[in-house]
Image: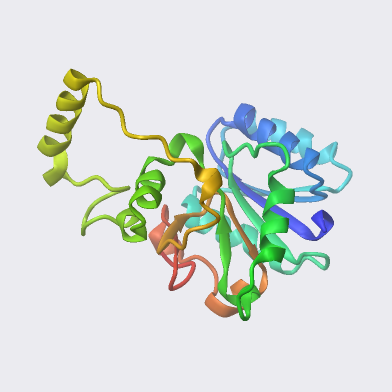
Length: 231
């Protein structure tokens, strides 16, 4: 099944040292088709990308862009290529520092097969939990409130300037009392439906593109919402 999964990674600037770890990891997962979108990285990175592509026996395709189109534009261009790949059935989007844990792809595929949703190929995308950037997701799971991920209007990843003093007070109070938030055992949470997700870590069937279209480049650096790959 892994030979029907196309991985898309967007990179920029001089981040090849991160990217190479991700590439090595997904190849270990059994991926045989990898599309790297080079959002105008610097000369050193581009040279290494060219060498990587040449040594890949056709498994790695690099799309060299002459401008930085952001996550939305970069993933869109990668998705346009992946969608037309003959053997492509599933697509796995990763940032250039989203190194998957060993066995991640197998877990995604097993979980996908276990889901009982009508027309899931056109309606469902999976998002892996990101340990280092998962605080807002942890809170949403803990409170069983997916809407917390969106936050209030004009907030960003759950932060709003109106909350600044409140957050400082809570931090000081917690430090004095040495109180820590209870750990969440994610092993007991099978899955959670969320209203929005970052591109990095998304896994879905390519028929989803037929249903909702490609990312809207005007949003530049955003994620995927339940209404489509547009914001």
